[in-house]
Image (cartoon, rainbow, N blue to C red; front, top):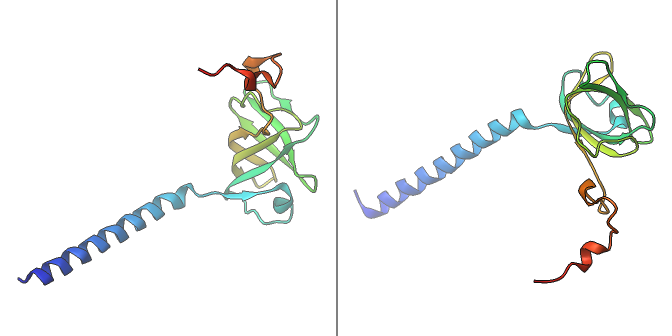
Length: 146
């Protein structure tokens, strides 16, 4: 076999290998992909029951209700235009609070409640960890250089 044909076969095998890896990667991500929805989109009927999705919004003031089992909470997520009731069983992040941003992974139930598998709390650029307590915000910038 000529060297030209060997190079052609190796190039075709390389292209086939890369294409195969791409197909495997895409099929693995398909199961993990979740659409991001806002409460207004859910209220408009853009979310199907049982569809995996992410719900993003703010926790409505006065809506957090802790159930008797100690790990289940119910609250209302809002975007100012619409609201969606959310139920979550588990430990919520420290930053999770009323009037704060949150993103929840889960699915819609037939009764219109979003059942979250995971909750992420969002914070703004002015966030300071609770461990820093009463430390003024400008102190971190004044740390000595080494």
